[in-house]
Image (cartoon, rainbow, N blue to C red; front, side):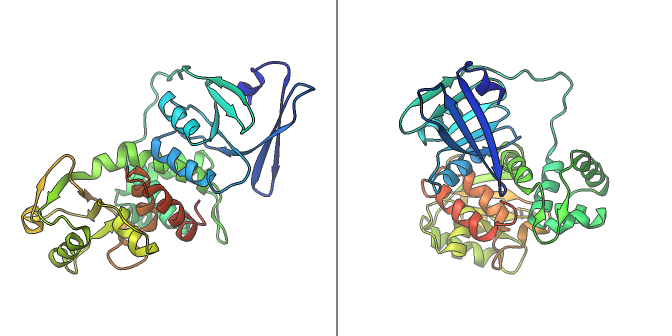
Length: 324
């Protein structure tokens, strides 16, 4: 709001909250009509996957969206603008536009990182995934939470203490985690920037070019073991959605001869991605051998395939309503 107030004395901003949603009304002097925006707030560093999810949600609303974020990097801001989503950040960058007029545009301001601030590790993000995937874990013993997240008990204890101090673990059985949306925002950014890179074993190019044939081969090779399709392969089964060419395979361990048995070779641009994915919850999908819907959703938002964001939004509405 301080960024908006800094636009000038003629700008009056009023935030109206009702029924879990917020509307911002802007008045630009006495002779300009009042403008209204539906407000979406995130307290998380904005990544491309998080922005992709926000953009897709905004497409399904009648009122223009205005995103409040701690910081919107220039390229992501340009991407938001290209998709008709306005934004304001705490650093002073903003783009506020309606169909009728451009209200303000400021970019190029950078945040100042405080010295000594430690960034969360991958284990903390895995715990975040477990809590979002099964919200009632917020009331479970630490040992059970650690097992679900695929991390050690002491790491789970430390991260739970941190989240409790931040007031993010309040749980109400009928609606789940009360701060679920903020935790989801954190997870989506962490998945793209930290978690997925740490899980990545290889991208590969199979001899089999047809995605359905590749899936059949994977099913034959992996059999009844612990494994799961993620991303588009999983979404196509969950939603009967048209999939692209990408196939994601989650495994708790990668057998040495797996590449040979799948008839694939490493390739930086290959359509098959192998991820070593820990934790029991990752493999609790909507159907056997599909990753958890939250993991499928996260993977879709990292995809560059054109239909992936639309599939992600449909999956969020159908399978992640209590979280998102």
